[in-house]
Image: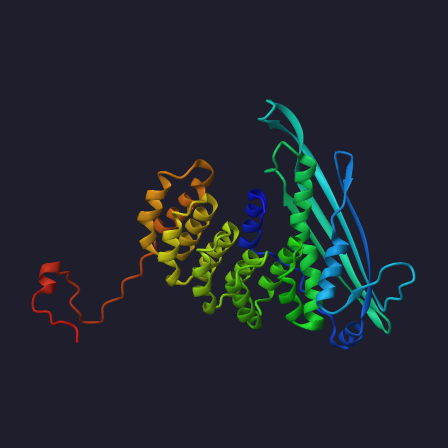
Length: 359
């Protein structure tokens, strides 16, 4: 996994994603569960600078349904007993911006929009339809490959919106097991989309299986597992995530640090302070952000010391963590003295005289 994609992963899972809360009516679920062979029809339209490109939506949807025991119909002779129709549209906008690489004005993508509908059909029951819509900021795209970067932008929003909606359909019909199985997929977009759905669901039944996957630590999606455990808010994940801070994969270490910040457990403070010295700057920055969220003043001195030596791209994480830790905390209002009580203040020395130790 490239460093740039890892940054996208961490940013994606560190932010909350609002998904549509549509529900399949109970009386329709049994009809949909009878589907054993589904036809998947996808229409998509993405265009930028006169070039069109597509994303592997059909492949991802097929794999998700396979985890639920539903195969995908292939060829004209196939006789599916269900149809999943996915329609997605994307629009890219451009603006003249200064290109520091070439020292000139250049038309680059600055924003994009993605929307679509998902419809599931089966014999003998009305169709179930859900939709999604989102905009994204593309102003941070680099100046080397604008087409590729725009595609990455659409991919990010697709993961955050379309794929979790498909995963949500499977969860409503078959429960949590297909989603947990999909976390072991070799396809990164599958894992990322399912992770987003699991973070939204916060199903406590997912905690133990995900901890087991994290402890195994050998799968391609181990970093995604760490991210989900952070969102579930279960203290059982704290110690396994602390151990994951020493994983050989920097993506796992980074995501474990982010997850520990989300969980808010003081047991993570000292391990995260040690991780500030990680050989990879991204992992160190994730640990800094997590310490800022935990709010423990033990981290102030180590963060201040590290800030003096960290390179510019990562200073923001350390500065933000220190700002959060050293922010002035609201003082508790003093209690009003009881009637007839002497309100005269005494010096600390006087207050100590004649006082008895607490029992």
